[in-house]
Length: 453
Ligand code: NAD
Image 1 (cartoon, protein in one colour):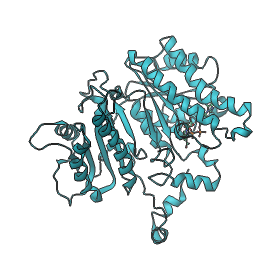
Image 2 (tube, protein in one colour):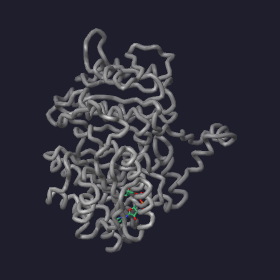
Image 3 (cartoon, protein in one colour):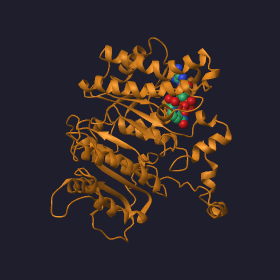
Image 4 (spheres, helix red, strand yellow):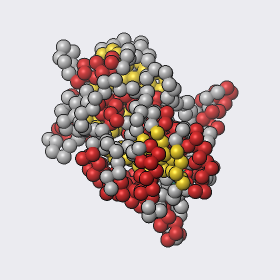
């Protein structure tokens, strides 16, 4: 699916015209290409206290290990920064953040196209004293507002460390790596909570093949987001089982062949769906480490006009199937070691959407079971997370009438719809071994959609 407006305002006469008329000018986003640098320029780390070894120094050291060109504030204001990393983990009173925040201000105009601002801070906790609670929650509002000010496809996101987590923990570094990279192109204004998680040996870890040796199952993978998730997990080294309804069998086989995976024709609402998925994954690939609940449908109607068929179908595919399949795998001990479950939610399940009471229920339900599954998977060293796409260019959104479709595209900080690859990259990140400290979270891939942002 293409956004012809985006192409028009980025080339030739129509680019000049759009500028003169003050029309939205969405940037072409920086997306992952193998071998391309992690960030488009040097990285500035701010927030440290000169002369004192602190978290900012540890973050700078980690970035150096990724072969990045790293500087610490104060720095040359004429530099074109690929990223600015703001370390606020030591802040305990609102006044503690001023110096770092104002140091960032001086460099924002020289952030490269597709640049990144990533803020590391402590997550607010239930037992925080008022000043600490205010400071930590304040960072949330700061990140979301700053992200709305960035231009040229640059994004701003936050990593919030929960009690016990340290900046050098694998999951913290994995989150930082993801937010800096082009893989997070359509993730903007988001704060991801990261705990300490079990120890993970990153020595010898191949960041270009993070899923090597893992077996993944992706439902609804014949087209759209699911097909792209399957391709991305395969790119990252996983053996992938693609699942979709028999009616989509031909397209499903094509995806399976393309990625050297296997196809399972199955309606995910079938009573034995969990058993058949497990049987296939074990028989063909010897296990099941990653489960992506992606199959989903829309049956939009105002509640006043809702029919039992439309309500029930959406709940059955989008929510009940996910519950039953995961329930079966947990019951029979079907998951292989350190499993990762990633489920597709939606911004409609967070902010609500007119005409989508059924869909909104199902997607909010996904967020609910994700939190509960995080607890159930923890004893296995596993995680459960949800990804909530905003407007993504697929067949599903192509069916939205022209005017609301254009409005939905522009109603985000990045002023465009995302691509299936953007959702796929977020899922691949949450499925990768280093992320064990990230669980029960909802990561929005919505370009900071202004609705419920
Ligand atoms: P899509 O309609 O293009 O693809 C969905 C796939 O799921 C299809 O191949 C379909 O055959 C399959 N499917 C449907 N019912 C099934 C069943 N009972 N059993 C097995 N497979 C089934 O949709 P998409 O846009 O790629 O969306 C994928 C997921 O992302 C969905 O869960 C959707 O709700 C969610 N999502 C999409 C967007 C968006 O903007 N496209 C936004 C938010 C959330």
